Image (tube, rainbow, N blue to C red; front, side):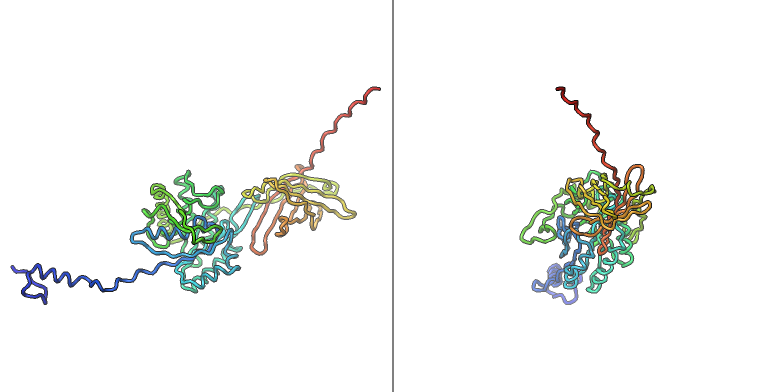
Length: 433
């Protein structure tokens, strides 16, 4: 049976030639314009050293570029050491960048413990409603005004306080759910990775900041959240510009992360599994975090003035253990000054550095309490409020400080005793004449 030719075919052509001509007619002409490339995703990062260490934005760009087909992500970061969202808001640079750019996403990263909360010298996660949540709401509103989706980068617990992850998770999840904003579950991925491989090195030697592998895990979690795709098989060695102290150096290109594929794959799988688990739960999880307990004073004995006078010395757990400050040695001197009391304190930190002596301010003696205040440090950062009771073990005190502007809080205790006087030496016999 003869082959039926397509309508409009030339009758003098053989069937094969006719098919070849027909095929050529179906091929786009070489002069036709290629389809325009997809517009890059534009992502603004607002954070601090957890974002700029190892240049997290550049790692996300590099992972996306290594995908098949490649995905173009363009980033900008507004970051400074230790800065929290409240400071970013007040300084204005982050807001200006947000309002000027054509952003698809704005990644918000709060300070690692949501502001400082030191209890007995140990870092705890601060109350998120004091500063984190109010400024998260403000930045999310501004992001949506320019058509961008706010994302919250859930950070990780410090190496020595893994139990604080639950409190961080609850703080981020609650505000993100309230605002309908997605979570980047980096902290959950870190917790999973630490459980699966306790020997993995995710932390810098300070136990807080990310190592290159830690930043790679965070970048993988970011990639999955932005794209909904698995990072398994993406590049394990990534280059980019360094960001010392949060300032991009475009004149220099360095290797930011150098992992073997065998080292990178477990991190990629953890990132994908964490993202999938969160997605299947509806994008948010509920937690029941431990609320840190604040120290209190014991019952004290009746306090009579002669028992308080003199010099006291002992241990103070109030300043940061991580900064080499705590436990410190507190020296207290109380004396009668006419009809009033006066005194001084001097602090010798664990590192050996000394602060003071500072005069006691607002010194008051009550039937079972003594109260006074001292500077937080010699830099004039506010007042520490002290109260103490007399016990059989000595003078036991409680110290409190709160910054009224950013709600940094310190709470700690001290216990002092009178220094023992050296035992008297026996008199030497007088020489015989």
